[in-house]
Image 1 (cartoon, protein in one colour):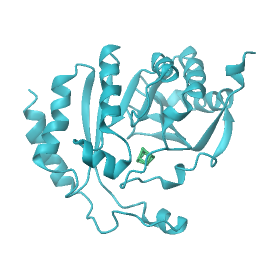
Image 2 (cartoon, protein in one colour):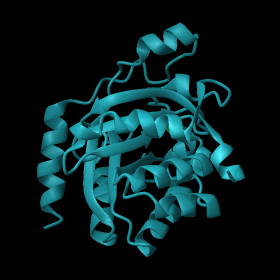
Image 3 (cartoon, helix red, strand yellow):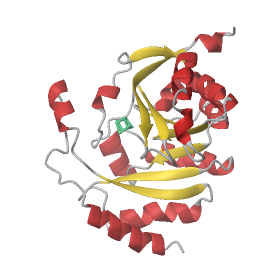
Length: 243
Ligand code: SF4
């Protein structure tokens, strides 16, 4: 057994079957640890790199295979977080194993790192769900502590390797929901042929209780939730401009 096979992953939680993180019905693995600090984060309990539980790739693969019968033609596994790229070597081992069983693999990420290990992981990734957060550098830095240039560089690489990608954008009232911002997000789909879909996700505050339990102030506690009607209108308006 080589060294790679001994790596353990730090896992926050496992959702057996879900329908909102990628195509079809999917098992979702939430990884522990994130270097970003998005003001809208729903999972502050995934930030701490020393939290969660250690699992081997074999253990997780076996767990996922129990649900394979439900995946159908479109479903599979999505790895989310936290930030999965922080555990790219472990995930490469896991995805390699899953691919041997014909399981579709998706990676839900901010695109904050692009090193050789991440590039290897992308070889075993069928779909990237790239969470684009803001449309200008100042907001990116202020509201996520990450540079927009990193997300752009990641997207450029996905284009280069022709990796099927969905853009995901959490719409936050008064922070990133201007016509200009939304139009820039949909424009990405026109500029990059790897982008197969743009998803707008309404900002929600279901995480308030988590923040209270952890004794952390939720920066957006006074920001209203996004209305579904606003999201529906935005799709109508900006998706049209693509065709
Ligand atoms: S990248 Fe995800 S897990 Fe990390 S702070 Fe942002 S929303 Fe939270």
